[in-house]
Length: 600
Image (cartoon, rainbow, N blue to C red; front, side, top):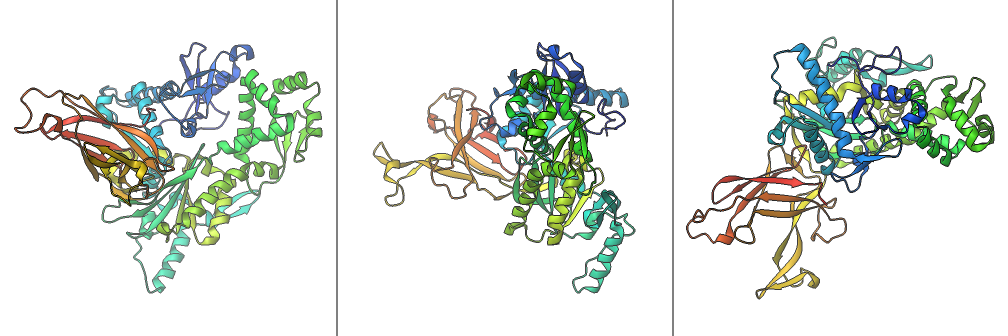
C-alpha cells in the first residue's frame, strides 16, 4: 500500500484523499486531494475567485446524459473547462505519485510499459463513461493507445468481491454481533465463536457441510461451497453499487447472477442534504451567492460538516456543533441586513439552534435525518435486488466502500436486513477493499468468469418483408425486392449471461470497391424483445468502425466480386468493457476495429 496522504485534518492519518483538484488561474495543475483543499482554503478570498477548484467531480460523468469528449465541468468559481482535461490532471497526478514511490523502492525499474494500471469505476456506469475514463488515461499518459491492454477497467463491486473472497475471519466484523454501547457501536461478537456455533448446528443437521475453519485462521469461504451466493454492496462517495456473485469450483472463479444495479446514493447525498438544510434556514439564493462569491469559505464550511458527519452514530447522545466561517456570518449580515442568529430564530427548522460560541448546534436526530434519504435509497435497492428470482439463496452481504465506514449506515442496513436472515459483514479495512481487490483483479482479470449484460445491444438491418408480420410503413422496395427496414438485430440481450471471451460474430461487406471505412450504428435498450430500432426505448448508443486497408489490384481471391469484400467482426460482451476485433476474410489480416460510445 502507498504511504498515507499528506494534509487533511490534524492528528488524523488518511488512507484516502478527497476528489479535489486545484488548477491555477491559467488552468495549469497545482495540487490534488487534501493539499488542493487546504491550499485553496488558505488563499485570499479575492485571489481564490480566479483559481479553478473542482471537488466531487467523479459522478459528474455518470450523471451527464449526453457524455462526449467535449463535456464541460464547472469549477467552484463558476468557470468551466473540458471534463476530459480535469480527469486527465487527476490521473496524471496519480501516475507520477505512484511511479515516484516505485522508483524509491526499485530504482532500476524501466520506465516504459512496466506497469499494468487498473482504473476502478462504478459497475452502474454505462459504456460511454468507461470509455471516457480510458480516453482520460490516454491523455494523462498512463498508457498509449498502442498498448491499450496495459490499462484495465475494473468494476468496483467486482474488485471488492474478489478481495472479500480472500479474507480470513479475523479480518471481518459481523454486524449481527454488534450491540449499542456508550453512544457508539459496541464490541463485536467473536466471528470465530459464531462460526463454531454454526458448525455445531450443521454437524447435527442432515445436510452437514465440511468446515476447514479452525480458530479463525481459515478463509471465510471455508463456510461456503461451490454454488453458494453472496452480495456485495459498494457504498462510495457518489453511488451505491450492488453485485451478486456465485462461487465456482474448482478455481474459485466468480459468476455474476444479476446485472449490476444501484444508484446515486453515496455519501455526497448527505452533503447535499446539509446544503438543502442551509438553504431552508438562510435562503437558497443566499447559499448559491455565497458559494459563488466566497468559494474558499464554502469549502471551509464543508470541511467542518464533514468532520461532524464522520462522528454521527445511531446511538450518539448530545448535540453536534458545526462551525460557521466568519466570512459566512459577515456575508449574511451584509446581504440580508440581519445576523444569522435572527435567521435561525425566524426559520421553520426547529432542530438547529445557534450556539453562543458562533456555531450551528444540531441535534443528533437532525444529523441522522440528513442521512435518511441516502440510507433509505441504499436499503431499498438491496431489497429490490434480493426480491429477484435469479438471486434467491443469498445469505451473506458484504458492506464495502468509504461510506460503509459510517455507523449510521451500518446500523440501518443491519436493522433492515438482519431480520430477513441476511448476514451483514464488514471487512476491517472497509474503505480500501476496492483498491486491494483491484490489484488482485489486475493480476488475474479472468477471475470473474461470467457477467450479465446490463442492456440489450444490436444493430439495424434490412430483412425480407413478410406481409402480416412486418408493418407496412417499414416496406422498402429496391430492385424489385421487398425489404423491411429498421429491423433490430440483437447481439446480446439484457440480463443474458455472457462468459469471458465469448464472441458474437457478424460479417459485413463494404458497399463499394475501394471503401476505406465501414461505420455501423450500434443500438441499445433495456427491453429484451425490441423488434425495430425505432421502437420506444431503443436508442443509438455508439458506432462500430472498421478501418479497411486499400486492396491491391489483383489481390482479391479469384472470382471474388470486388464489392463483396467480407469483413468478419467478433464482439465480446463478457468483459468490463465491450471489445471488438475484425479480420479481412480475403487476406486473413486483422482490421482496425473499435466501438465509439462517445460520438454523437
